Amino acid sequence: INYALGISHGTYRGLATIGHGGADSGYRSNLLIFPEHELSISIFANVSNGNPGGLSRQVADVLLEEYLGEKPQPRQRERRERHQRPKLTAEELAEFTGTFYSEELDREYYFLIRDEKMYLERRKFQRIRIVPYEEDIFTWMNRRITFTRDESGNIDGFKLTSGRVRNLRFVKR
Image (tube, rainbow, N blue to C red; front, side, top):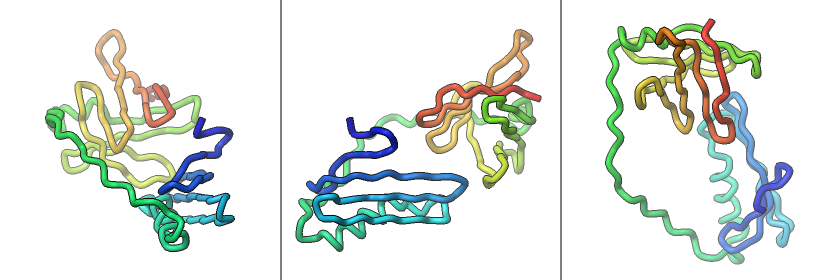
């Protein structure tokens, strides 16, 4: 397998690699090792869009230029029909606002409306705009928030899905 005990095994432009990336609260890091060339590249960034993985590969492009294979070609993406997102008014968004709590994380998330747009606030993070995707579902980046309802149809919580996390439950307070 290419990932075991926190270590990624792979290749970059024909050379064997070992490494790992990480992220927390706007910080990003990446360690990229080329064991056959006794080269380790470590990048730390204190901004969420720092892209240390890409920067590590750029450093490798310079330091290992004579050993690297061809640069990978950009992938061509197939055009597909764009998903039609619902457009909700501030009044319609209002039912999704409030404080929600995850017992598993011991953390509160706050949903609010500003300028007729929906936002999520979390401790240690900047306010994030979330957008309606389908009925009772909002998204941002690769994350999905699926609001749940009680028997009366009122919002009683949500489930968060993000990468390796699936259906992490929050209840409305």
